[in-house]
Length: 297
Image (tube, rainbow, N blue to C red; front, side):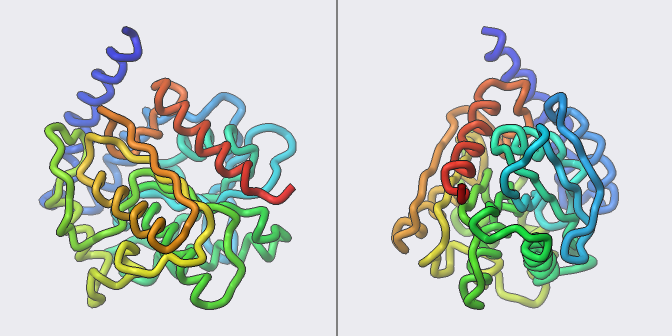
């Protein structure tokens, strides 16, 4: 009963405080400031440690939990490619560091509209290369991300594959945004977080002069063959449900080991409430297990 009440309260909070800000009429600079404050409600686990650093020339936050991390997770934050940062996602990276036993490195990749595609992808690749330069082996690194960062996660793996470079050991995406054309958006009865008009504007700002069907912008239009094992988590109360299910279909078509989990009555990137909401905490445990299972000993 208490968890049901908490779910209801969190849903109302997202609907009343976050969704109105994610509006195309609100200036991006104001969205960034307000969302930065809103994410203070996403609380990392006690004992998580955060260090500002630079990896591959990209500013980043390194999150650890415990005294002896095994491996690394390159975490790509969400925000429609126009808002968000490693600071807004400390709750997620803290809990992922705890459940995976890894150091979680979240780069502050460049954002649109100041820096449209392929700036975010270039920075993600630079951070990947930076982890290798630090001494991590590819089989010791997973890549994860939420929303736009989920799409960026898959795009990074595709680019590395196409260049014949080593790939991460696994991929984890929360509520991935993988079709920026928005031609197949889901229409839930309740959507507490996202507005299609906002994601549509964010898509245009990020893509710039590139077509939205570019597979490195919208990975569902690409070939996913050869990508690492993929875990997808999504809520049933979000317009990106179809994105997640279509990504799973394309990955399975291309013989990628894929698992998709749909959480009924939960919303976009509900994992931000890990440590508070039991189902979010359980989802993060599953993500950590996926990472540990595929890491080299």
